[in-house]
Image (cartoon, rainbow, N blue to C red; front, side, top):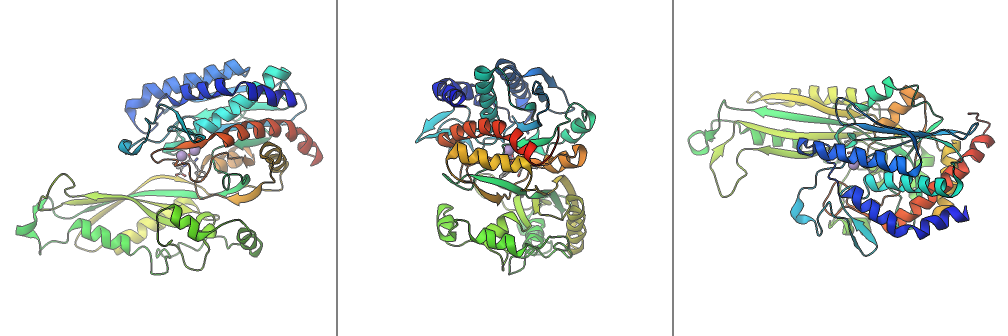
Length: 463
Ligand code: BES
Ligand code: MN
Ligand code: MN
């Protein structure tokens, strides 16, 4: 172990240079202009896998962006880990707000800034380098490893379900490991055991059959933007509760034990508000901030548009207005049911003065992973060794829809071993990864691979 860990120490600069190379490829999955970059990104990952000693490396095409697969299966009798991550990233705009260019990784104050540095290229790279260190020093791994890195996570993993269904045999494993989430805070390592799901909707409101002069027609026509705003405003009541009938029916009640555990976590609302530049927080009455973030559903308007938004003034009564509205959902809600409820309700409250269309853009299911599994226990020990501190248990508000699919399609539980931080500006300008966490993540991954067989055996599970 000592030798493997000191290999990491003596290769730090090279590791960072390689990571810079990876982050320089603009693998934005939602914009077709980046399709060639996505391909280059996939090739870069495949080359890395080959270099570190992974075998059967394949760039596997899907109807969308490719998945990279590789394996190392030389540890007979030991558990097989299916390691999942994504090499695609979110768009960079608004680009003006980046202090340094998003695809030129730059280190400031112990943080490495670039799009994808934390979500998720940096965390995928953490695993590539922990595997490299193990292979270079020992010539083998203490576990069997299958790795898939996909290119469509940020657009809803549209083709991954079919990919998993088509390659059930290839992906056969004992557990899934994902590093695509955050630790509780700087110096506070944690294991994540829950994620919210998502139902993402788009609403189109149509008023008159053409844009109108707002002087000649204003007063006779219900402005579609106004109608839409009225509808959106009515979706929450004054206690911050969502008003869609039945919305909370399937929401699993927080147990007393879980509420008590959350209360013990080092959290300060005032500090959190200040960090966000807010005078006051907002949310559903009767729940603490962590409860609202992790275990309660929400409804957010992600974007709203219509009419004239260019320079200067234009007097117009627009024909149409649009909104993108998403709902984060929690166990035991399902995205299909919530999407249906939303559509029915919005159509019901739509006034006679306008017409309305509702579309589902994508959905994903919420996940709770078992914390008493051998994988999670190995992760706890690995974090303790990698960061020198006992980790705490937490949930997350974000979504990784494939977690539930891995359980459904392959029967596998997932260990969520995130090395990001909640304030690393994922999806926003100036995304970064903290370098202490980056190297702590590499150490922890090495320990995880080393610890897992022991825990796997102890729990009486067999390969
Ligand atoms: N890595 C995030 C998910 C995440 C965020 C987990 C924060 C834990 C904490 C992932 O890349 C992501 O952004 N997922 C999307 C899913 C969506 C596109 C289906 C999300 O949560 O919005
Ligand atoms: Mn991610
Ligand atoms: Mn993301």
